Length: 613
Image (cartoon, rainbow, N blue to C red; front, side, top):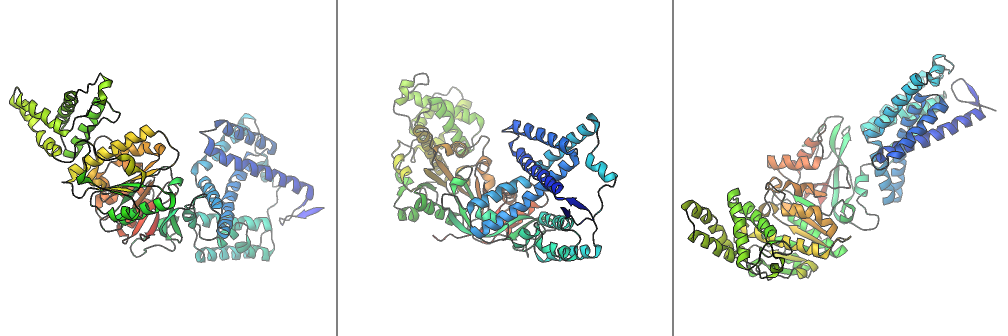
């Protein structure tokens, strides 16, 4: 029995079956080989095994060129398969299928996939041609013209390609989709043969064409990926656009943000953006933007929804008393910071020397002290501990009642009184105004119960405190005590608390060393604590805070330096016009629109934030 292949050549069914088996084996090999690139670090032996498998296959087929072509064709097939899975996921609404699309997309868009295939091919080809002293069997057969050229009706092929170009103009596609579609039509024409009606049908009925034409918009994947498999996320709003690379179509805010082709651009999409901290690499959230754009409203929504959905309480450090009504609504604890006292010099498990260094570091950053003043301050704090009988080399004394800033002020006054020179006296006198201010405020023996404020929604209302200096020192002291409780409690596998810090640029200014907040953000995940950092001035806060926030949300920013800085953080990498598109979007955002980038998204999205709850 013979089979007409459409190339002017007939072939026995047995040979066709054998050829099909070879192609199937090649397909299995190419899929495994493509997946190997993601396992090179964790499983190098798998890479060696797959390369060895390719060597054996190449020898059996006597054609390393065929092995290369088959590998790349299967990669193309995987990309097309992704479209079919996306179509199925869109119809069924299955989050698991969307995650599969995301995984396949990561594979085929990674350049290392193709580089590994190409490098292996080059190695095998030259080993075969020069070491084994053989040529490529397939190439030799082509040179001998034993494979007949297919009989192609040029007129109908040209008409089919014209139909394809028309479809590409009518149906918006990315540049990658256009390449896949066009190559797919050509491949389908070669496979189908010479029949004119078959050729004309390929632009619409090709196995590659179908998913590209009838799949729902692929950009919805980034939205649907936010659906957790086991939890319902907090819907923050409607997605308006996603950052996309390709030929600009259906652009968002086109009158203000334009892009060349092909390039990065903001493409309109639809769907909900849902936040789930359990599906991020860490729990931390950064919210930035100018005043009045929606930062605090979004933070209130998050605090409320986190508690209602998952019973996760938040401790809010509130400089302007904006969250009191929310905490009361949640049945939480409202703490008026002007009516309590907190002692920054309590050891809380640290040694006197460690605490002296920490407090001196805080005061240096808050008051912008010089290095000499800081060094003197460390010695003064150690003397204050000694005044209370707390000695560095005697741990039994560390449980004694700690000194306060009033004790420290007395130590300084004594130093001034007994100074041996005017220079020495002036050094101590330069510190006295700061210590006098601190000794007369809320920094006495601690009266606040931290177990209570961490067990339910709570707010530390600081509006009545005298200035940002006191607020900053109080905030840092509270965080140190929270850190101490974290270490005492031990590691946890669940999220137990959020700490919300509003106006962070006023409380935690950038310094030489990473701030306490940044250090806690690096370690707090294993202790079940997340941070929500809110700021108008991202340049003024520790850059480690921005780097360690898995979820970054930016409302409108117009100040040039802060805009440049945050746009780079959101773009992730600078290529083509990607950074420029992010920068323009943040600049032109309407109120209550935000650019969002989290660890589950490959590219940022623009969301119209719904602050009503």
